[in-house]
Length: 362
Ligand SMILES: [Zn+2]
Image (cartoon, rainbow, N blue to C red; front, side):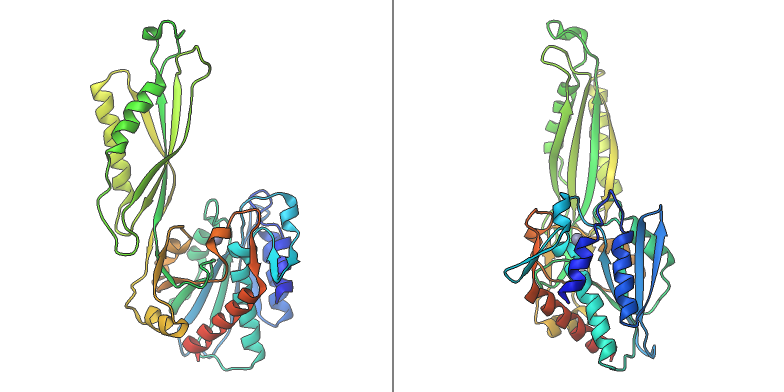
């Protein structure tokens, strides 16, 4: 069990090398267990993998979706270390343990010779941490219109998650005119323009509240501007991280911010700034009262919860099946140098996956 996880951690799948190596580890695993899988490769080293455990097809299928990629790390973090009942390494928690647990559960179900009435489908996709390229490609080609539910085994520390906020990243760039700062009246100060904008943004409220997620948030996280202590800056940019709640339309939010920019340029002829959307990914809210969530709740003895981080889940909403996020590992350990997973949690995750498969598909 832990051998598969160690191989997956060792198969570096950060942005600089792509996901193919990691997908191949899974192909070898599935092949050795007698489960068919297929890799979709593009741009030389980007990859998705799909594996299916076939059934009589009388019931709708259950789909597990993981991401193959991890965030960057020093090379030594791709050498998994086992210590004190834990496996350390980049991706051990986010989310190669969850991914391994679904694959192992499938192999164990096959070995047990239980007759399944619905297929188990395993998909692991590329680029969740960057461009979500894998999941976008996956939903374009995935053909199965009968799914009872989708499980994303991201690290929730075995919490049953049915909602998360969405993410909208925008970059505002203010333009000015350089001048010697002993005569600032000869220039246009881009930092002053940014200040005007940020003052207005502080009063910008995005309407709406959600029972599990609260309100949308706006955080200005990066500012770059100016060349030297004695030059009026001709340039200033700010990156803004907006977290949205279900029902909010990101186009409307962008329009609202653009309105501030237009108003400021009308009030002040020197004000020049533009907005660019860097990333836009939706929020998740699965109906807590649907059969799939209700049954999962009873089976796992957990109440539905929300998490602050985002996942690829909203991209899967076009498959029209209820989505839950449930997996091993503490979310606080993700993206950290001491990222690890307890081996007992990996085992527990395999048991949970088997329980869900047997409940929904037999
Ligand atoms: Zn993740």
